[in-house]
Length: 239
Image 1 (cartoon, rainbow, N blue to C red):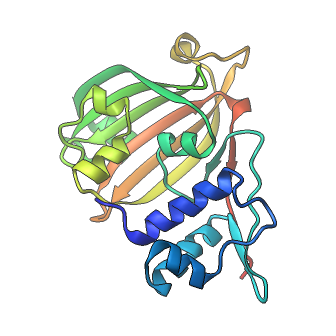
Image 2: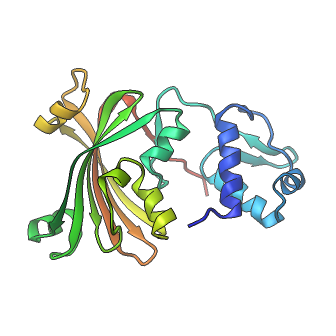
């Protein structure tokens, strides 16, 4: 799907904040000025600002406007509360990303896999193993299962780019909800063979079940991360 106007404004302002054009403590242009810059309605600007507030980039201060509270992290940061592809997260953190697909096949879900993933027995899924290189180091090993009836015509070439971009821009899918679990697990033989572990014998494992706008589970993923390079954060608002 094409990006909405508010999303374009949100992404542009977020990029300018992350690059330091609007440093911590500075104020964004006024609503009136943003309406002029982006040639849009007040509601569109407010929706973009609301998303920046919700994600901890800015804070609205009475009498002072919208102030930047974002500070560039020392380590890469990944959001617990949001849904973004690794490509989007790498860009946000200023990291280069290369993805290599080392396994790609179609599977029919059996009872054991249904219990593990949440798919129904008999569903056909794409199973991928992907090694993710950040700034040239193999840091993440993904085990991805994508429901073929939703993510149809998936190829290794698409998977080495961004599956979410393909779903949204080519298939017209809307990605809505994800459920996550975080565990620490010992390395296994595949981890040792694929990742630059630098002596670590355990990994941070993030398990995702992700649903589209129809409430259909289309993805089950286990991402195995080298532990010291990642910070996962969540922004909370006091009620």
